[in-house]
Image 1: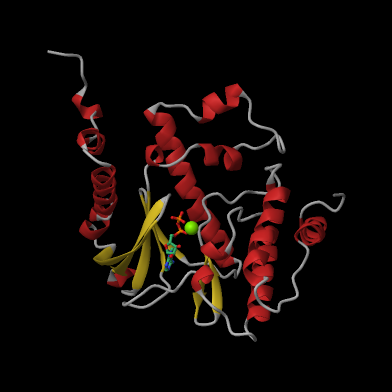
Image 2 (image 1 turned 135 degrees about the horizontal axis):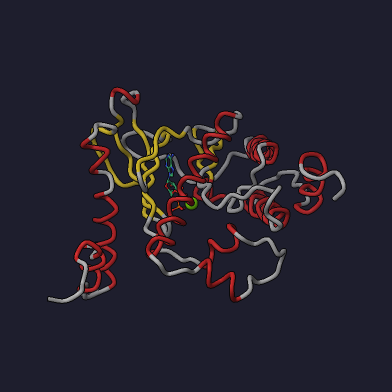
Length: 275
Ligand SMILES: Nc1ncnc2c1ncn2[C@@H]1O[C@H](COP(=O)(O)OP(=O)(O)O)[C@@H](O)[C@H]1O
Ligand SMILES: [Mg+2]
C-alpha cells in the first residue's frame, strides 16, 4: 500500500502526462472542456451542442440550443480553460496591480502564483464569477454586451450572436462601409463611458473583442475587467483600450479622440475630478 490518495488523481492530468505530442495534449484538453457541458445537458439547461465557435487561449466557446425554460434559442457557452492550462502572469496585473507601473514584489508573486490546488480553484472560480457579474451589471445598464443567462461551474451561458450556420464575425475581420465607421466608433466610445459609470474598465478592449452584428457592435470578454476605484492601473488600462480601439478605426475616415486626453476627461467626470 502506498500513501497515494486516489481521489486526488485528476483523470485529465493523468491522461495529459501520458500524451505523446502537443496535439494529443491539446485534444485531451479540448475533450475535457467539452465534457464540462455534460451536466448542463443532463439538467436540460441546454438541449444540444451545435458546434464549436472558437477555441482561444483562455476559453472555448460553443454554440448550443437552450432549453425551453431558457427560451429555446441559440446560446453561447463559454467554457473556461482550467487555470493550469493558462498563463498566471496575466492575472497578476489585473487582480493586484495596486502599485502603478511597479512590478509586484517577490512575496506578492509567490502569493499570486500559489501552486496549491485550492488556491488555483479559488482564483479560477473568482475569474469566472467576475465576468458573469460584469456582464450582468453592464447589460442591465444598457451597454452593448451579451445578456448573461446562467453560470454552471466553469461555463457561462450567454446570448449568442450569429445564426445556426455561423457566429457573428469579430470586428477585426470586418471591412466597414465608409459611412458606418464613424457612428460605430461613437458607439464604442459611448460604451466605454457607460462601463466607467458602472465602475468598469474593460482592460482588454480591441477589435478582437467586439462582434459585428448587423451593423451594431457587441463587446465581449470581460474576466480581466477592473474597477477604477480599487485598481491603480485602471487609468493606464483605459488609455490602452482607447488606443487599441483607435488602431482599428484609423483605417477609416473617422475623427479619432486622443487616447490620453479622452481618458483624462472621462476620468475627471466619472472617477476623480482632481486627477
Ligand atoms: N456571445 C457570443 N456570440 C457569438 N460568438 C461569441 C460570443 N462570445 C464569444 N464568441 C466568440 O468566441 C471567441 C472567444 O470568446 P472570448 O469571450 O473573447 O474569450 P477568449 O478569452 O478566448 O478571447 C470570440 O472571439 C468570438 O468569436
Ligand atoms: Mg477574446
